[in-house]
Image (spheres, rainbow, N blue to C red):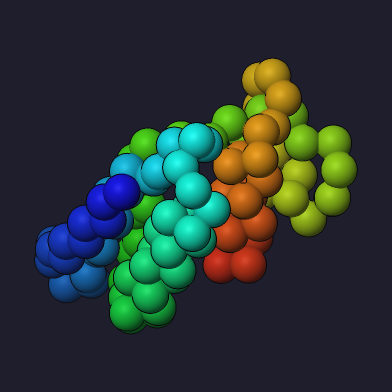
Length: 101
C-alpha cells in the first residue's frame, strides 16, 4: 500500500493538503489492511485542522448503497451503486470517525 501527502499554498494564503492513497486489496491479510488504516490515520492527524484536505486515491473498496447504519449512510449519501463490500464498510466507518464525506 502507499500513502503520499503534499501541501501547497493557495492564492488566499490558506494551505491545502492532498493525500493520495493506494489501499491493499480485499485479499490482503487483515494485518496489512489494519496497518494501512492506522498509517492513514497518522497522516490525517498530522495535517493542521485549518488546512483544506483532499483525500483521494484507490481505496480498493465498494461503498455502494448502504442500508444499515444511518451514520454511514450519511457519509456516502444516496448516490451509491451496487452493494457495499467489507473494505467499503471499513472505509465508511473510517470516514465517519474522521467526519469525512
